Image 1 (cartoon, helix red, strand yellow):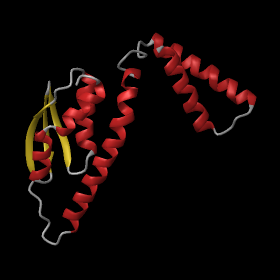
Image 2 (spheres, rainbow, N blue to C red):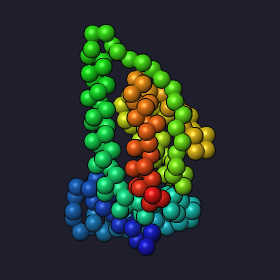
Image 3 (spheres, rainbow, N blue to C red):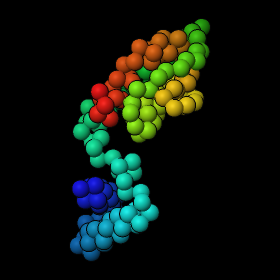
Image 4 (cartoon, one colour):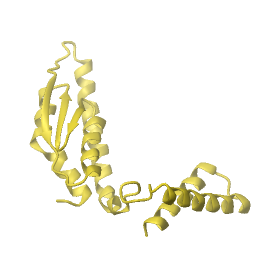
Length: 157
């Protein structure tokens, strides 16, 4: 099933980027998608880490939630930047990632970094060192809301 999914994804990607739907190009896209799949199998990258189709169901709810969090955080950082006194309180904190897979921990670390005002500066096992622009951002991370959402996304919660 993973190979069929990867081929379909590559083919749809080809079609979207091509923008031309003549019979020859449609067939060429399908052939190229199959050839790319065969190359990925030979290089041993068409595995559960390279193409995690089991995360698709969780992504349907997680990605919109993350987009909203990025928007809220971007607004908060914008208000801080535009404030005449620039009320920042830079903070370093360590949070524990409760995800059971490396993909889950990487998703958590990247979600922190994607959210304006916070950045993951180091990862050591299940411990993530995070720099926050304001103390409230660090406290919000320490509360564990994002950690729980990523755990649900990966299917471990």
